[in-house]
Length: 269
Image 1: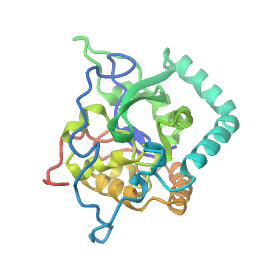
Image 2: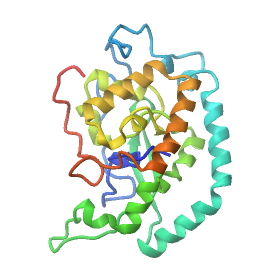
Image 3: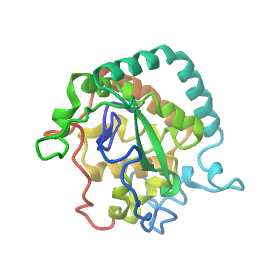
């Protein structure tokens, strides 16, 4: 589960739970240039050109060949074991959400996955359906409540994403899936984050989560695309557990989670 952080999300709070259909906005904008193959130059963390993104290399298996050898197998084995081990916790959390927040128990929303293709993200619901006198949803801070804050701080709301991993829509480790509406706002360099499957947790999440600004977050996502490996994924998973227990980077200053992305202030990513 995401190291504490998100605008969705606890790591994952890259997007709030907004009313308007279980799959979020309809009529998703097409992925920008770069999502299906950017000509931007990959760079190492030191700024030197990187011949090819390790995780984004294609093989005979097409998109399934992306990532290091064994990444998909690791995802399936760990996700399956985690679902079995945490099944009692999943049940208790579902009951708590139903009792204190009502129905539906699961929050579903379309998010961009590999190559920017949409999939339905699954999370435990953390916000109430509360609206003001004008019928518009109340601010996130007022809809979140004590139970929602606890679920996000502990990252328990992320557990259903293990199902997304088993389906092949997500990976255990990768850039967090943000909102569909952000796709047209990305620079080609930022759009490279979609060259790999999105993750429950990621390199950006264990290096600040929601506490870092968007430009830094996208830089960290790009660095992961260029350097992902089994050793790095294991390192991220271990650091994620530590971050969850320490409850670090859950929100950005002045925001419940993270301020919305409105485009990069710097050109070219």
